[in-house]
Image: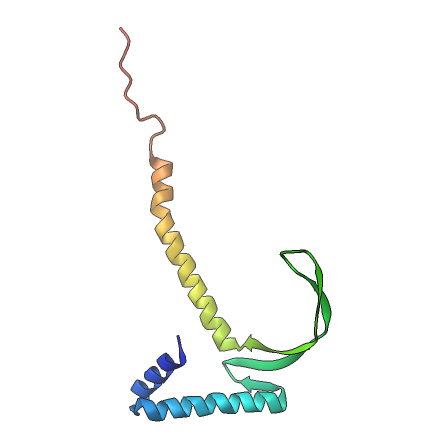
Length: 125
């Protein structure tokens, strides 16, 4: 899903023109970024927590050459999903597993019930 898709969805739900909705969505994103930079943490109930964390400098390895390479310290944004998001993702995971099991069951049952020797052999006289 892209920002354009989000704008379209919200515009349809609240019956606003897409141009106005796009401005509102962009202002929301801008406010989130500004708050994150100023505060270092944003907590959105039932959605999750964005947080700036500091990664220390370290030595890494170039996967092609195996050579050790220094990596500078840097700040990164982390995200921890909220309880509601976690629950909905787990439910999606359960549904996908149930579908996969349902699709695999007929094949597994057919293998179990199929006779192992299906070749008709002529009887010797």
